[in-house]
Length: 130
Image: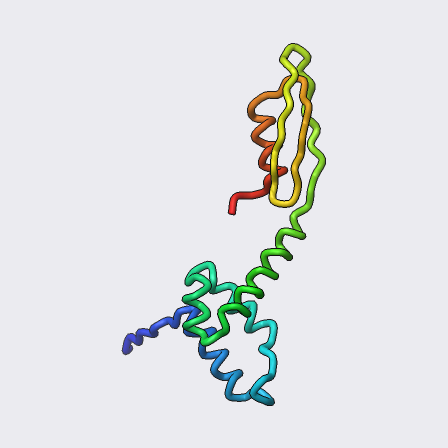
């Protein structure tokens, strides 16, 4: 039996070939790219950067940036807020905590709070790390 080795194409090359194939078959020169091709290009930005992706795929930098921004806004909108109930601790001092998140600021007046509760509350308000 003869062993064959296949070279696996990178995702960038795959998307580049898909875009080239679409460019050859598009109905007219100014036809808009299909959303699936934009999604594929946006997925490469995290790996190759905005400029590198736009240059490799022969896409307009500003248009690709707008598509990346639209995806980021959609993801932020999907983050749901939740109610957090913290147990009371009457023996501790009263404090005021202000947490500034991406889209909101929360100001709390608390009567005692454990550090673990504070850390969890902060993660819920600010959101996951980028």
